[in-house]
Image 1 (cartoon, rainbow, N blue to C red):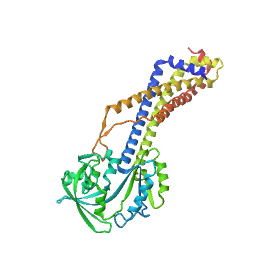
Image 2 (tube, rainbow, N blue to C red):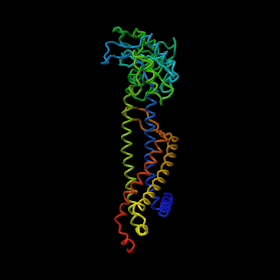
Image 3 (cartoon, one colour):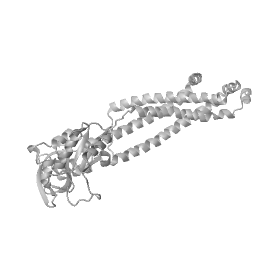
Length: 409
C-alpha cells in the first residue's frame, strides 16, 4: 500500500500543471462549502442567542393552560403569589439556572389624547430584567426603567409607537385595559425611554412597565410566567427536562424551541440549502476529477500497457489512479480549508454590514463561525469524492488491449 501511495505521489508531482489545475478546482469547492457552512453556523447561533437572550429565555414556566387554550379573561390561568414563590424556590436551588425574570403580559389601548393605539405590554421586574436581558435591549432615547418607587409609574415604548403618538421621554401617556374581573381600568404613566428592536411592526406595539404597576392596572397579584435563563445553552434541553420533573404537574415548563417555532423552520431551510449546495460542489469535483483522470489515462497509455504486460493486474493499475485522485483531493481540500479559515478571520475583522433582512430596518453584521468538526468532515469528504471519480473513470483501462497499446506509435 505504501509503495503505491509513493508512486501516486510521484505521478501527481510529475503532472504538475494538471495536478495544480485539478487541486485548484477542489480547493475552490472546499472554500465555498466551508464559508457557506461557517455562514450558516453563525446565522443559526445568532438567531438562537438573540431569541433566548432577547427576552424569551431558555424556558418559561406558566400555569397549566386549558386543552383548547381558550381563556375568558386576562390572567385566568396565571401564577398566583404562592405558586410563584414555590417555583422560584425550586429554580433557585439549581446551579444551572442563572436568572429568573417574572413577566406579566396583557394588551390594551395607549393614548396621548388625540391619538390612540393598541399595545402588547409586558410587566417586568426592572432590576432582574436588566441583569438577565439588559445587554440585548437597545434604547433609542431616554433611560431604562428604574426599580422601586422612583420608576413605579414609568414605561418604555417602541420606537414606532413613539413616532405615531408623537411623544418623547418625559411625556405622559394613558393606558387603558380590562382587569382580571372584566372591568375597565386606566392609568397615566411617564415615558422613561424608547425601545428600538429593529422590527418596525414590533416597535409599533411594544410597551414595558414595572410588574407592580401592571398588577395594579389589572388589579391582580398574579403573573403570566417566569422566564428562566440558564448558565449554558448546550445543556438547556436536559436541564429543562430535569426542572420539569421537579416542578411537578401544577405548572408547565416550555422550552425556548417551543416558544420560538421560527428557529426550527430556519434551521431546516439552511440544512436543505447546504445539502443542495454541497451536492452541486460534489458533482463539480466528481466531474472535474473524472475528466482529468480520463485524459490522463489516454496520455499515459504506454505506461499502463507496460504495467499490464509486466503482469500487474488491472485492479492494481486502477488503484494507482484512485490513489492519485485521493492525493489530489486531499491537497485541494487542505488548501481550501486553509483559505477558508483565513477568509473567515479576515471577514470577521472587516466588520461588514449586510442590508436589513425583510421585516427589519437595521442592518445585520456579517459574521462567520468556524466549527472545527464539521469543517474536518467537509474536508474529508472531498478527497473521497475525488477517489471515487478516479476509480469509476479508470474502468476504461480494462477496455484497452495491451498488445495494441504497446505496438501503436
